Image (tube, rainbow, N blue to C red):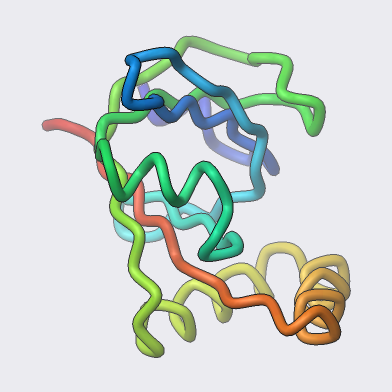
Length: 123
């Protein structure tokens, strides 16, 4: 199952509205110790939906969200603590380098607040 995510730059994450309707969003991710980490704005709709419903689906994808494998059920949690943000930021810097630094700079200029999303898979 996890082999399909090896060497991928993007995942498409499907979060769910209160009505149960799924919303798919392609994002950068990092795999570390069996979990995926995503760095996003704290007020993004995907972060809000995850805070309301931890059930998500993920699939490796292109930058535009085109699936490159099979959808997998998972649980996601949003954590905006300084420790979680530092951990995820360091992982993203290693994987995405200057591209990630550019996004961080734009966010700082806009005074954006961020959260770390941790995605875990059932055994």
